Image 1 (cartoon, rainbow, N blue to C red):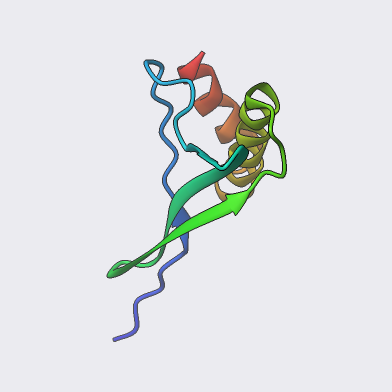
Image 2: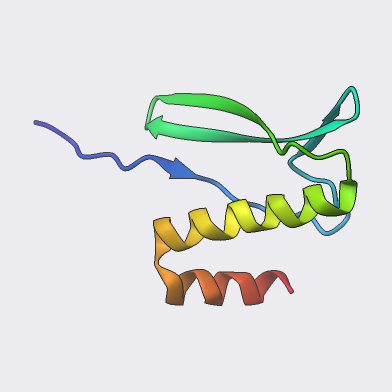
Length: 86
């Protein structure tokens, strides 16, 4: 029996750490997150944000996760989820 699995991204906002998912590598900010392509596997991703500004890195991180939430959950549900974090 075949089971369909949709790649998911788990997004958590930790208010105590405004730099959650951000990593500074020699002055350049990166975003890091984990993808779950199947129920049994995961893939850690680190992607350069191409900025040395922490403020810009936070904006880019938030935009990245917002766009992925919209793609995964749809615009309406993503908007409801965003309100839970503010």
